[in-house]
Length: 145
Image 1 (cartoon, rainbow, N blue to C red):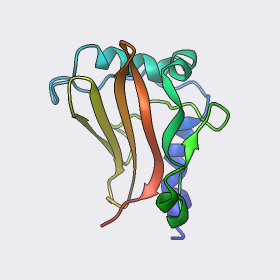
Image 2 (cartoon, rainbow, N blue to C red):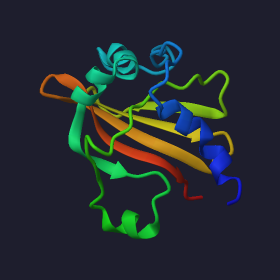
Image 3 (cartoon, rainbow, N blue to C red):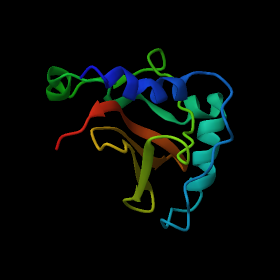
């Protein structure tokens, strides 16, 4: 538990409004992504105004380090006031890996996991009103084993 703050540092720096390396779209060859998703994903991480306009608020999910009461309550929601901009990870140099799973042609789930397998975050994107939007975000939390 004493190493938890060290494990969360990359996420804190990834969410700051500092200039970040250019976002790279998910590897379309590794996964068959729905039409338009890769372009949306790249713009979502590079343009803060675009990002905030493509989130369905109040956004269902979990905060970082959610305790069992918050998880059991299931009423937590992100608001524009509590949202922190998401930036792209450089997965080639970080200790995290990404899994992108198209669930349907209009829903994509993304998991970003620490190499230890102990911590991760989950995002879900869906087409809402003809455009891709973030519809769920669970911040960095300990994963059940």
